[in-house]
Length: 257
Image 1: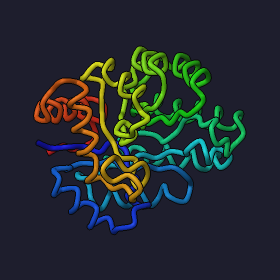
Image 2: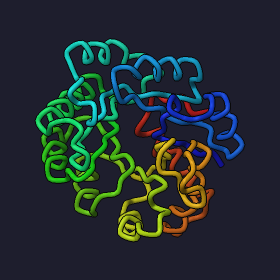
Image 3: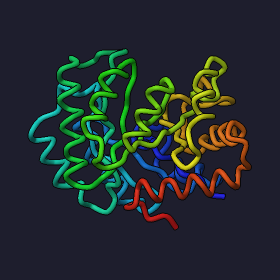
Image 4: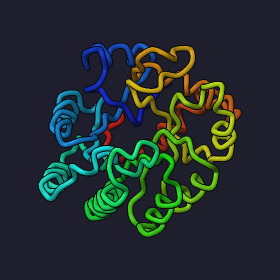
C-alpha cells in the first residue's frame, strides 16, 4: 500500500522536512503536496518541492486569511513559477467567513483571480471554504467547465459537496472525520463516490484521533485512511489503490512512483 497526503504544510511542522518524510515513509505515506498560503511562504514551499520532488509537490496560492496581500506582483510570481514540474496545483485559495481575517470582497477577488490562473494554466485548484458555502457555490458554478480541483479539508454539507462534485471538484477528507462530533461529516463521506475522494492531514493542524491534541504530521494520514475505508466499506488495500488513481488523475504533474 502507498498513501498520498494531498494537503500538508511541511514548512510549518515542528520537525525538519527530512524527519517528516522519514516518519511518513515508515507509514507508507510516499507522496505529499505542501501548500502555499501567503507571499512569504511561496518561495519556501517551491524550494521544498524542488528539493524533495517527486516525493513532494507543491501548490502556489494565497489563503483567504491573507487575501488582503493578494496583488499583481503575487499573481505574476504564481504565473511565472506555476509551470515548474514541482508545482502541481494552484492554492490554497477560497473563502473563510468564520474568521473573516480579510474582508469578504477581497477574499472573493483573490479567489476568483486564482481560479482564473488555474484555468489559464490548466492546473487543478486546492480550495478552502468555511462558513461561506453560498458564495463558494456561486463562484464554483461561474468557473464550471474549467479545470478540476479539490475541496480540501471538507467539513461542509452534502449540498456543498454535491455542487463541488457537479462542478468537477473532488473531496478531500482530513482527520476531522475521526472526531467524535463529526457524524455529519462521516455521513457525507459515505455519499461521496470513491473515485472522487482523497485524504489529507492539513498538518500541523487537525491531528486525527488517536493523536488529537498533538501537532499533526503527514504520517498520521493513515488514521484517516482507516476510518474512510470503514465508512466506504472497502479494504485498506482497495482504498489505497483507488486514492492513488484519484490523485494521479487530479494531479498529473505529480511523479508517482
